[in-house]
Every structure is written in C-alpha cells, then in structure tokens.
Image (cartoon, rainbow, N blue to C red; front, side, top):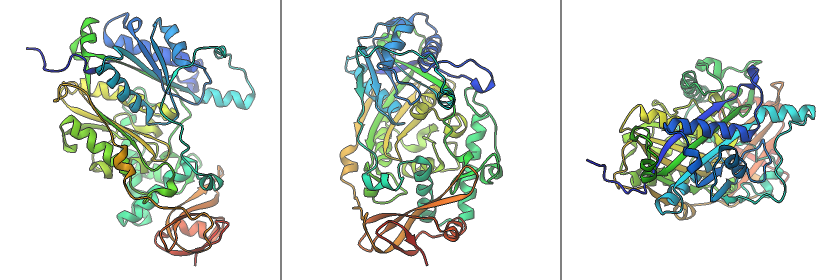
Length: 497
C-alpha cells in the first residue's frame, strides 16, 4: 500500500560532506571545488548515478573565504547541471535551514523539482595566504557573469552605538548572553562554569565519533573549563574550547526534490528523508532593543510553530541538533524549546569540535541528521539555525516517515516576535545604572584587556558600558555582578563601588 502524501512533498535524497585536512598535508581545494565534491558525494548517496544532471535549481550559502560573482553557476557548470535558477544567500548561519525551507516550498508549489544546496569554507588556506600575500590561483569569474538570485536580507545587526563600542563580535556578545542566563538561573560563577563545561564535554564526545568532525577528541569538563596555554580564556566565561572553530576547510551539499521526482529518478525509498515542517523569524535586530539578553522570542515562536506544524511535541523528538557556536546559543535555545541539558543536543559535535565553517555549519548538521534518521526509521529530528548574535533563526523537522499532514508545512513567525516588548537605548546616559550582563575580553597572551557590560538605566533603557580597571576585571570573573548598581559616564566608562 502506498503512503498517503502529496507527490510534491519535498524529500532529502542525497547528502555529502567532507573535511579537507590541509592541516595534515592534504592539498588545498578552492571553495568551489569543495562544493563540487560535496555534491558529488550527495549524488553517490542517492544510489543513482547522474542525478546531478537533473538539478534545476542550485543555491549556495554565502561564506567568507571566496569572492565568486555567482558561485552557484560555477558549481553547476562543474557538476554538469543546467539549472534554470542559481541562487546565493546573504550572510547568516540561519540561512542553510531558511533556504532549505524556501526550497521545500518551491518544490511543493511547483517552482522547482530538484534543488542542490551547498556551501564550503576554506578559511585556513585563505587566512594563511593573506599572511604571506600568496596568490592561490582560485577561479575569478568575469564581472559580466550573470548574477545569482539573492535570498535573505542584509539589515545591519548592530546600530551605530553598538558598533562604536565594539559590540559586533560574537566572542564578546555570546559570553554576555551566558552571564545574563547564569544570573537568571541563580547559578554561582563556579556552578555555571561546571554546567557549560559539562555541556561542551558531551558535545566533544559526539564529535569524537563523527568521521567528518574537525576535532575528533573527547575532552573532559576540566580540560574545557581550565585556562591553559593551549586553551586560553577568550571572553569570560568562555575558554577557547567553548568557542566556534572557524579554522576549517569543510564543504557540504544536499539534494532536495519532490517525492514524485525521486521516484522518477529511481532513488530507493530507504534513502528518502522527508522535510515535515519549517519556520523562520528574527529577534529584534539590534541588541539594544531586546527585552533581555538571555531569551529569544524568535526561537520560542519558530520552535513551537515547527513542532505544531509537524504534529508533534518536543518530547517526540528523538534527535536534535541545536546551533552551537557558543554554549549560550545552545542553552538559550534549549530553554525556549523546552529541552533539558541532560539530553544529547547535537548530532555532529557542534561548531567547536565538528567545525564551524562560518555560515554553513547547519548544512553539515542536516547532512548528519539525514544519516541518523535513516538509521532510526520513523524517528523525528529537529535542526535549528542561528545567524548573527542570537538574531536570525530557522527550524526544520525531519523524518523518514511522511509528514502526518501529507505535505511540508511552513510558518513565518515574524509578526508574533515583532509584537513583543522592546527597550530603548540610552547611549549618552550619565548616572546610575544596574548591571545586566558582562564579559571580560582576554588577549592572545591570556591577559585581561577590557570588560564590556550591559546596563539598565533607572527608567529601563539599555546603556552599554566598558571598563579597563584591572581590579574590576578580576572581580567580574570571581563574583556575581549582575544586579549590582554602578555609575556610567556619558563616554560609556563604568565605575562600580
């Protein structure tokens, strides 16, 4: 008896990923060739040679180590495809899942039949070449190359006041989110350090079994939490082993098509993984305007919608991969989704250990999730994606079984998020404040350099602050300062005590 589902419902039929170990002597590959190899592996994964020639849409996730005019056109040419559309996302780690959601809708509604999604990063090679002023000889497309269709938006994620204080670096912002969450949970500094180290230790254990992970080693909580020459403190409370690892050479590709197209191509049913549902939204773009720094209304809304559209609850999820650039990203998402930290929250090992190829990590997460679900028929898996500083979010629910609604379903949750509370900024505030969150930035030599603090004025506006006072920097790492009163000058320098 055939399964009751819309023949246009989208299914993932092939996945491919690779880590090019240039750190172990492998010859460098330019990003286009990493994407080509990933898609060839995805074609082999379908079990049917020649599938790539049938691709009618190619979409690439925008990354940092290349400057192609239209990378999707370049990849299509090299794999022998003749797509009617080539696309490119804007910047953001959410866009793998977001463009997959868009592609699933395009397939469902007849605008596409077989979509190739891919991305690749060769950051180690690119940065080494810059240091030595080496010409890598990578492909340069002529300026007259037809441009891709652009997916996503380029709304600035920081306002002028935030940029002036350096608040546009993830290594500064994500630690602040975790300090705010630590205070919300009532944890001491040491209890919090233990919680995040234990969480990241479990992530490293998964990476140790992942053949595509960049760092295949399980670390103990003590190794992760303790600063050392090899594991320096970066932005308190995060050591290097709690930060996303972007010094990787990785590529991944996905093949998504209508179920009826999969049948026409002769792709075995056991290779299919259905996309049940998806949802997208972003939190207030500027951190100044967020109601607090330890929650995400967009994750809450998109998570609830994706699960509702899939006809399941959070307890029905057998496998989860939460976007994991830093522990706070996982901890905030887990709280918003209703997932306990005691369960496994990654299928790859996360961006620290499996690898953080800038915007393309989720391509690897979805590729890995497909394999996990094929090995666990009927189970449901959730992948989350995050761009910016807990800013842009996308969700996807997957299973080898057809969706209960018989077709893919998607929700735009933006109106709900926009209707939520927001704060105003107070960039020129001179007077009393209450400390809301903070981090202490360390240099490469391990020395404390500067504290960044989020503070609230008596009337509830947010005012960012800084300090280079050595005594305060030390105290911030040993005592709880969230909730303490302080004095902020108009130039943003804060005095506590």
